[in-house]
Amino acid sequence: MTKAYPSDLTWEQWELIALEFPSAKSGGRPRTVALYSIVNAIVYVLCEGCTWRGLPGDFPPWQTVYGYFWRWSKDGTWLKIHDKLYKWVRVAAGREPSPSEAAVDSQSVETATMISQDVGYDAAKKIHGRKRHLTVDMLGLVLRVLVTSASLPEREGAKKVLNRVHNTGNHVQRLNTIWMDGGYRGDEFMRWVMDMFRWIVTIVLRPLEQKGFVHLPKRWVVERTFGWLNWCRRLSKDYERLPQTSETFIYVAMIRLMVRRLA
Image (cartoon, rainbow, N blue to C red; front, side, top):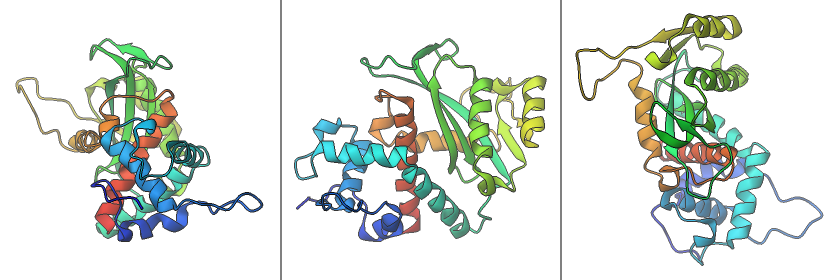
């Protein structure tokens, strides 16, 4: 029997996503673990920032938990659950399921000492690690994320993440405006976005005469989303061997946030 942890999903939250996880494969050994415990163990790792081996003993074995996490990442289960909840949260907020505006920004984060794959140096931020390229709607909900080496220029990362957003199809059929900061300025980049996706890039610049924090219209929602992610200790740095695992943890963090809003 697993004891209750602050990170656990309530039964009401679990019921929103329980049917989206794949059923046990036929012909193999019967499933002996409850998926509710598996998901709670994954969310525990996300929120508490522990290693897989550091899972408390009342959860299923860490090898089993990690196995499910990885399989659901590879087969698109996490992304499917994320996209379904995304539409529900927008409708519950009185919005159309598909957004008309989005904002893009990047965040450079340090990697753990033992991580060497897809790691670079962001000279502007003076950070050695990886860069999270985030696309969010005006509610701050993530559309798509891309994790790359920190050395990748912002405009190149934006091209890749916007291509992912475009490939979601009906999820962004109303999208027409992309808000970005001054780091994305450039006529060639803006023409590329217009030619590829028929979206208009609008640059919001910081007033030169103001110092400290400045509330930038339409752009601040991305910063708030980065703040939400920081509540998850596993995302305080990039501890993952593969960038794809970092992306999955961000989607899981948003799934947790959205089920809490809905239930």
